[in-house]
Length: 532
View 1 (tube, rainbow, N blue to C red):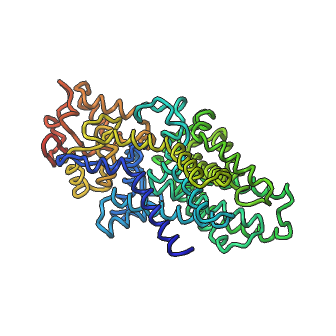
View 2 (cartoon, rainbow, N blue to C red):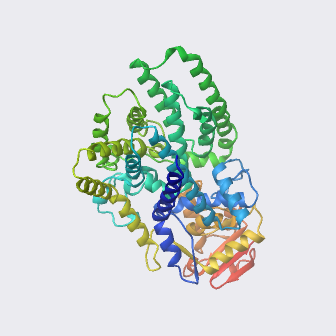
View 3 (cartoon, rainbow, N blue to C red):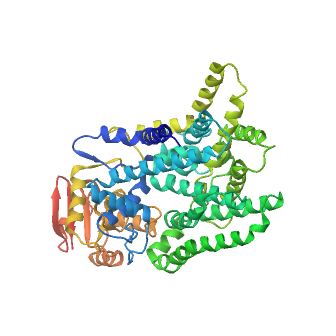
């Protein structure tokens, strides 16, 4: 690669990072002085602060992290290298947790674009063709823009194409979401590419890194192991059935497989023996039910990519099996994997499925454009196609940006008051890591990412028995509980701190300042912290 190509890759990654993060920049710039922008990724408002929680625990010196959105007794057991790195980055630079999160997102976007370009260099394309395919991969979406959903709260599992609301559904949304999604997709792409080269008997220096990449992927996004195994097995069978697999190299394949197991098996054992034995972690997994939308909504999420991918396959049909064959196998296997019965995390397996489909579609657009004359017609058609393919992503940006203006009414709080933020900083400075905070659910969703402290109520999947906790909170706000019942609730939920605001009070409801068990430890404006 030339210096110019490296520079261009860096600029492309920076542009993708900036454009995909547009709603966040709008939110930051439009925040009034008396408020603090929480910097939630709008497409997954509640999950962003869960990542912030892990990052904040790492900033405070934790190598292993815990589920801070539920009050069950637990030890820190989860090792997540990505959030550990991000937390250390924030601590070393004194950047805020959201700033470190965005820096990690930029680094992951750059690594992804660099890897993708290197793979495209192995395909018979001129530089202009490589950039065209890359543009399709990083900007394309489906037909979600044709739906009538006006804001994120309107999306429905069974009625909205996934390219409008599932961050893993295409590359652009993944870049805009986090280093977790685009970073795991880079690992997935690298592993399958190098695995294909190994199966096909082609020379590659990168094959030695498949094992470490598998181990890292298993730690940061273990769901993708299902895709890896399924695609590698299907690729092996495809090459064997077509007589292309070099059978005389079977010993090399066995050795490679054993090396991969050495990297992956300890991670699997660690999850089963250590992490999932913690009730807070096991309960999180049981509640983390993400089923895939009906097939027609997934099909619509790729829209015009389908006919372009078909053109790409037809153009490649006379060549010997190439990396494009891998993309075809990956696409077909991926569509089957997301509907595997018995899996509660089917939708998570959408992660990376856009890559093979969009790569084939990009190849198809290149092949189609080569037949167009003159050049002005060719580039006009190409530009229009890329713009149309990006429409769902543009609509997502518009929907998300509209939610972060001060007068908007999103389905989650985009900002907190300065007093609420300072109360969370007090928790960080003066409370113990073992303390548990009782608060309204969205405050509970925000507290761990700012203070690194555990809450009893705060996340749809990570709070054990969320509906029961919501009922507990509503009962707590009323004046219907007897003193003994309040004492029992505090004991059961292990609560010793109360985060209380004027808006939490009900007419004639509970008043903690009259409850002698509480000591007022922080007060500013309408926000109070009480400690047992």
